[in-house]
Image (tube, rainbow, N blue to C red):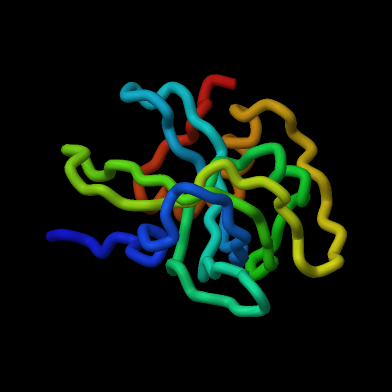
Length: 154
């Protein structure tokens, strides 16, 4: 079964940076190694739109990003928080066999919370502590899907 690729991102091309907008949905984490020993925190944004010349163009329903310093500086986000950022379109291969090509937005900069809301700061510095905190935030979801806490021994 072939999934739809993000053709709107593909059409933008990879040569320049664009200004985007999305809505915060949740935090997560992903493993960076085969043995699932090293995890990094992530953030899910929904309803990604391109902002240009007072126009908004729908790009894709969702994108996952690493929880970079720019996203952390926004504080602990709530569902529905509106975020704008600049980024460049890039292609990647996906799937177990790495045969499907898709597109995402990489190297987000100028990340900004659109409403003037002050959110509590991230109180954790190390990625492993953040991943464990995210696991605890969504404990029931991870348990029902059989996903173990990433750093159980700490």
